[in-house]
Amino acid sequence: MEKSVLDFVVTKTHNLMNAVSCSAEAKKAAEDWLSAVGTDKEKEQTQKYIAELEADIMPIDGLINFAKSEMGAKVFGEKAKDVLAHAESIKAAGAKFCDCPACTAVAAILTKKDEMLK
Image (cartoon, rainbow, N blue to C red):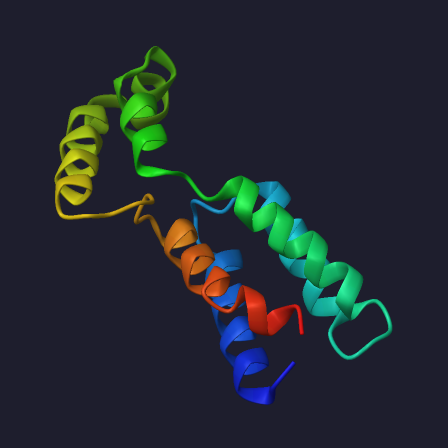
């Protein structure tokens, strides 16, 4: 992987890990990938990391449906309606994914997917 791509992905990976909205699975995959960089496990861990990121990123319609749900009401509390309104607004503006800090970091990393797999 080119150094500029590696530096970008490492930075975004740290952003992901520090995001309050980062899932435990994504954080573990990020830690495993960072530990494997520069080793003979890097390619394998890169593939696993990308698969986890693709599974974890929240499509905007998923966020909208979640914010409308009973579980969304439990998670977001009185902010559920605000989250729903925000999600609908960013969808109308063309967003494909949630724009929370974790999903934003994941989306940025996935823009480098092809270069990561070289």
